[in-house]
Image (cartoon, rainbow, N blue to C red; front, side, top):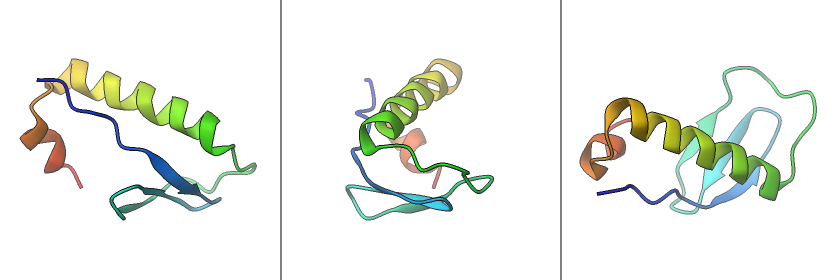
Amino acid sequence: MKVKSMKVVRVTKTEFELEDGRVYDHPVELEDIPSLEDFQGMYDEWVNKFQEMFGSDARKADNCN
């Protein structure tokens, strides 16, 4: 089962927020803040990479917060 990527609703220089309210810090502060559309594209790419590497079981992905 493929995990559906969450919608990114907010991006700042230091963090981003997903539609379910979870907030994640960036590993490093961003110099420029990307648009929500651009950041969503990057986020979706990384979700796909992690699914390829670790499998796509929704329970596994959900425990990575």
